[in-house]
Image 1 (cartoon, rainbow, N blue to C red):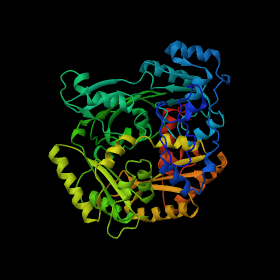
Image 2: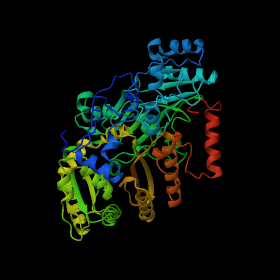
Image 3: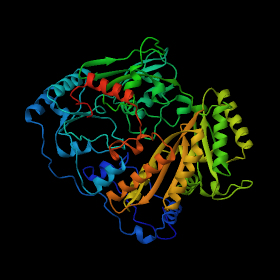
Image 4: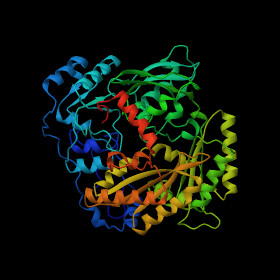
Amino acid sequence: MKYKDYKPSWRLDVEDENTYRTMFRWGNPDHIEEPTESFYSFVKEKLSLSDEDFMIPSSQGDKIVDIDIPLRLSKTHIKEFEDIVGKINVATDTLSRVKACYSKGVMDSMRLRREILENIPDAVISPSSEEQLLMLVKYCYKNNIPIYVMGGGTNITRSNENVRGGIKINLKRNFNKVISFSAIDQTVTVMAGITGPQLEEILNNANEYFTNVTGRYTLGHIPESFEFSTVGGWVASRSVGQNSMRYGGIDDILLSSRYITPKGIMETDVCTRDSCLPAIDEIMLGSEGKFGILVSCTLKVRKYTYETKKAFSYMFKNWEAAVSCAREMVQREICMPSFLRVCDNGSTEIISKMSRFVSKGILGLRIRGENEKNKCLLIGYVEGEKGFATYNRRAIGRLCTRFGGVSATSYLNRKWDKTRFNDAYIRDILQDYSIVVDKFVCPLRWSELQEVYSIAADYFNDIGVLNMMHLQDISTYGASLMISYARKYKDIQEYQDFHKETLDMLITAGVKCPHSYSLGRTTDRTMYNLDEVYTLIMKSIKKLLDSKNILNP
């Protein structure tokens, strides 16, 4: 990619698979996302940087991981694990253990760039059957060996780390198959280690994989980590997808699940309504493997209608107009988009700057009463039967026009479709120059939204931090405010201090429980104010199922 002026030496090579860098780099090691010149200039301007700041990269993690970290578990334990799952499914070399411990969060990247290794498991074990997994859990429970579980390794909250040692169970390697599919019930039962792309490939082409099936299907669950994350990870973290307005979050899609606990196997029934008993799945959802290890689950599927998908994008003169239009859309049920996102001016600018093909088109739109610094983008899709999708697309157009929106054409959607999972690749390249990109996701009611948005925007703008916000997971009662920001840090401590200050700002603004982007072991703190009875119930369940606290302790 040619630059007219100075161009930094962006890292565009493919790294050796045994380096620290391969462990924190996002996703596909062969994919490179080079910043455009307009994006580079935009970052420099917003962060008050110069070309000199991009001449010498900081720690890049190029060193080969060649150290030997001794095992703490005895040879007797390792031999027992090998007898249960087979020697080929037990890895005790340092590189395998490190790879199973570090994920894709900011703290993972910052430490690996500095060759800081901690909280490493003593063995990475990949069971091939439910029986093997049950034997492993019983053996570890008997011998007080902590168990941590990994799937796609995409988490960003340090939950992959074996802070108390023990073993790491890898479900992605062998627990990655479809168990059964029912076109009549429109359900699929899968192992917990299957990834999003693996499952969608099978469902989208169900007629090729299953007998007596003629249609095409989809789960419709597309979180930002979709390309590499697993179904088990979605359930364990109660994930929400980009198309949640049509398909719901994973809690809406999950019908039943099967867990292995130290007390044995626990399986919930496929029942849409049970008036007699509390919903155990609701307790297990989001528990991050604390109460049991998910081995399989049954999920709802829907008819594949992506071929009728219709795109829309509109530019509004300011944030308030775009938000009001989105709220009217969902509260009055004028139309039913499958995906809807409202971008503030910062986010709109970033979208335009990251692609040299769309920048002039977006920023050149003329809107009556517009101010260049306030323009905001509303973008989305509708799906379903052809007539249904057509009706909804027209209804959205009429509504957006009524709120002053100007069509930005569907070209922008097509471009976004191709690049919507690529932000993390840019994050990795920027961090080569100590610029860290991080996120907070704040679930808010409509009545809280504008105040929290204003407080957060003022906070970042006052201290000169590049920020961009958008609404996602939009519903009748509220939406999630995604806050992304970029800032240059000199060391890990400075990042942690700023992260804490930003969390304190959100607490003061009235945010009660941000998404796990901002919590977990990253900061060793929570923003939930749990009452005494709720805490008692959770502790009682933990004590009953895992009194020795070996599961994700």
